[in-house]
Every structure is written in structure tokens, then in C-alpha cells.
Length: 207
Picture (tube, rainbow, N blue to C red):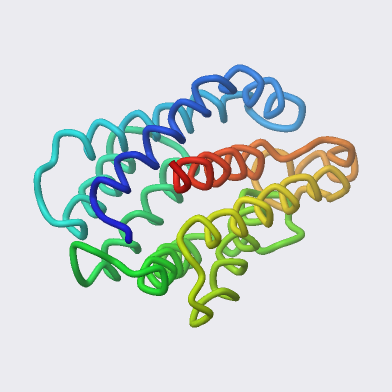
């Protein structure tokens, strides 16, 4: 079952992963972009963990507080999309203890809200190349009786595969778009950090 405590554990695990990889994410982003993605996603995850740890309220209210804190405390598209995801999740958290299927629906709602903020899709060399497959893998397990560890393992595997695929793509958004085919051969930093986060969620779900 997914609860506020599950959320806190997931976010803490994700923050640890991002902290360990922030410099490499900045270096990766520097090859085709501004070189600050690691710094941005680290700030976003720190804000998320801080709000989750200090907000004593319902799951929906904690998710909403996380989303707005990330968007208000951190600048740039990374925080905007990350914040939108958590605000969307807050709109689909009907109780304090969610079943695996309800958890999947909550993550689907997060993605739906993100898609209101960006036109990027798979193949565009953005974080969506990892996020869309991750949520798609979760959706495929809805109604099957899958456990949370199974759900998040599938999401992590799909996110990693999507992130790896960006190496052969041409960037269509952001500063990297201006480089055209010169972006081929580099992984997208946003997709890679998304994969790291879902891998952290998966690892935490089996503890």
C-alpha cells in the first residue's frame, strides 16, 4: 500500500541518488544545454523532501504542497514540470492508503498534469522519453494484481530504457534544439535523472 510514509521514503531515496549524480548530470547537460540540470533537479528534490518531512497532513495535501514548493522555490523547466507532476498526483489521491491500482492512477494523474505544461513527447530527447514509458509500464499492470514492487520495477526498467534511447535522438526542445543533429551521441540529462528517480523508487519499494 502507498501512504505518506511511502512517499517520504521514496523521495528520500530519490534525493540520495540525485545527490550522488548531480555533478555528472550537470556535465551531461553541459554537452548540449545549460549545464545546470543536476543542480536544478537536486534543488527540486531537496525541496520535495523538506516539504514531505515537515508537512503533517493528508497524502493529497502533502503532494500538493510539494508541487507548489518545487515550482516556487526552484526556477526553470525542470522544477515546473516536476512540480506539475506532484500537483497532478495530489488530485488523484483519494485516501491515505492507496492500493497498487490507485497508486498507478495517482502517477497517471501526475503525468496528465505534466502534459498540460509541455508538448514534448517520446522521441524529442527530453525527460518525457523516460517519464512516458515509466508511467506506461505502470498503466500496463493496472488490474493485474501486481504489487507495488512489481509496478515500480517495471516503471524503472522502462524509464532506464527510454533514457538510454535518447543518445540516438535529435533534441527538439530547449537550448539543445539549436544544435540539431549535433545532439546525437549524447544522453538527455532530464531523461537520465528521471530514470535514476524511478530506479530509486523501485529499490525503496522492496525494503
